[in-house]
Amino acid sequence: MTIINLLPGLERLIPLLMFALYLLTAVRICRYSSWVQAGEPNPFLPRGLKMVLVEADTRVRRLS
Image (cartoon, rainbow, N blue to C red; front, side, top):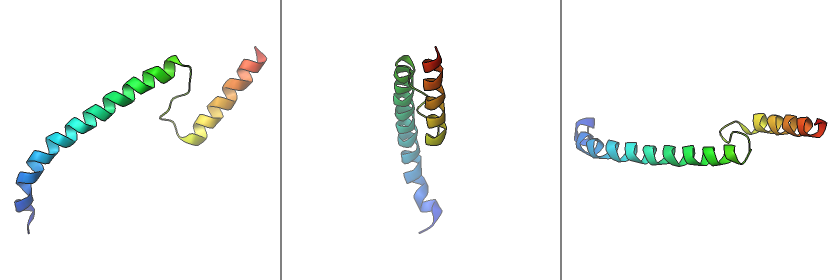
């Protein structure tokens, strides 16, 4: 089996994958905006950096 035999299948698969990526991106953007409105840190940050930001935020809140 060569790559030429797979090309018709890829032509049908790529639009489906692009649509799935579009849907996932739209859902993540909606979730991100709701997290920001709730005052939570950016959900796309690495876990270690997110913990640092949460600790810094709680220190600032204690001081005020």
